[in-house]
Length: 165
Image 1 (spheres, one colour):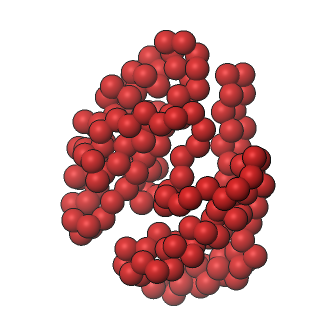
Image 2 (cartoon, rainbow, N blue to C red):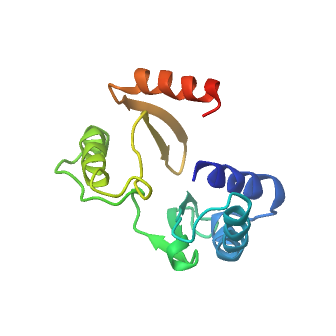
């Protein structure tokens, strides 16, 4: 639900006055519920459609890194996550200490799991990995891995778009 995530980011950045992530956490459940209801109506999404929004940030209370998940399946209730990272679709973590080294393994495991889900409900995984790394002193975004079929997938996407499909 990429467009939903983009709409939510615009809401947070352009239409809300916030003190920080803890303040955002207070407002997020109700605002996400309302936005999701409108989004589902606007795009005629079936009741079975779901989405999860993750927020990561520095707490204005103690400057620690905090993470929250808001799942449509639970009415966007605030779910405080253990420090680390968010994974969707869920899958077991492969063995290894360096998350950047196991991301390709993890995503291939997600693809394997999702290949067994009905196409209409499947989460399609591909393209490239985007890592957003937040610490108390910096924020960086980088692309550590691209799937081998990405160039062909992009050509197919552009062909379908050009044909109006």
